[in-house]
Image (cartoon, rainbow, N blue to C red; front, side, top):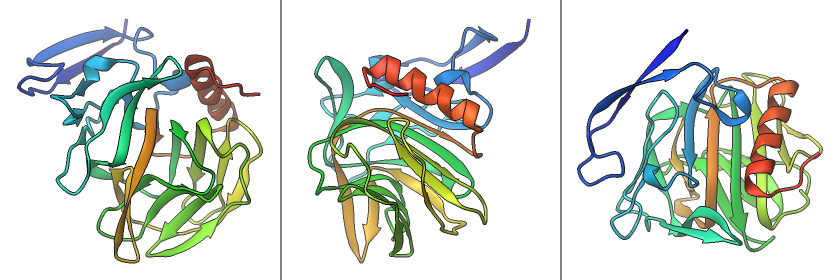
Length: 245
């Protein structure tokens, strides 16, 4: 039997409040869709113990082996642990959380389950809080910003409600985004930047933040195969009550 050894961080007062080494049998730890290879970030509101709140969320513990915990920063309103339509979420109001180390823009695959209220709004997903580089849902399009210049997909449908957005980038190749397992919409960007903020990005000198609910976010440091992407999308759809192909 293969064992994974996970060392939990020491955070006073947090849901995981003491240091512990936990042996997890292979197969009992289930990454999103069973896709564990390359998993760099995984935050999940359905496990409330991973959010150290103290009124607002101070830490959102990363369930991946890397430990890129989302952390409160003074420039953001920290989110609240809440729910919408019976599903758990971290509710943001002009909020964001920092992660360290940052995640390379290329290559990656990103899957997020979030709730947005307006098709005209701007919702940073993963970005850089000190520079205009990141991935956003904005005015019903997935936008890829690099140093304040952006390339946008075609209009996505639906663009409001609880959504699964799946993004994949390749180093020097075509990049794609889809909503709820629908049609892949292509763009092409090139960046070696490290994305360091959940729900925030600096655009034209203004810090743009997230307002809505994030239920789950997973990021891999590679471009997942079609089979893997389908597995991730279907697992998230079943878990969060979202209809997918």
